[in-house]
Length: 235
Image (tube, rainbow, N blue to C red; front, side):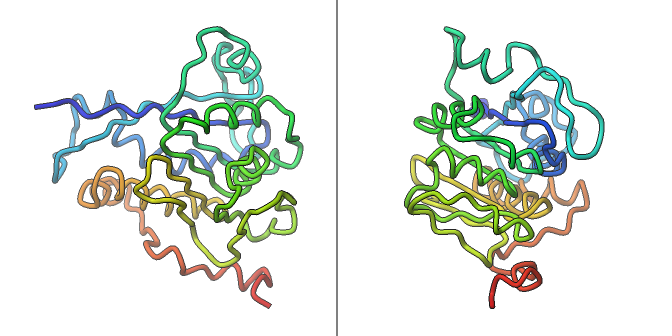
């Protein structure tokens, strides 16, 4: 039986990142990590076509999230070092969470340069919460739909030709094409997006297994979004 195709994922984190933005989706993605699939404790309903292999990148070797313990990043995976190295590789996926730290990131910062460089050939680009701001600054949403945390909506970058969708749990651009761009609303919406993304990537029977193992009651309709109204975005 053929091995699953491995999709490499660059997970982009930074100081004051919201840990749940990436940890929630990665908990679901973990059921399809390459090492896990070699000896799965669960029997998947259908053949798993893709395995996920994450690499974590940071703005420094020590990342302090908005809440939770300090995170350690391999020195070779600091953005500036990675961009300057001669062996920089292309990743299949870019995953960008959000959080308070996005407010301090500027258009010429190394993380934006990393996103711009990787996005040219990445097959999938995903953002959660205000991680969408970084994709917007990198030009990823030019001519595309985007959404972000509704409580921070006023902070959406003023960049040209971005369709900021006020009411959406998540949005998808160019689904089924050679490059898909997914963006979710705030924090917990990232898990809903990740669940939908996995259903698209590995099939709903397999994504449902992962969801039920962690007892996650996912929202499966991207248009059901009570938070846009709460934050006065529909007036």
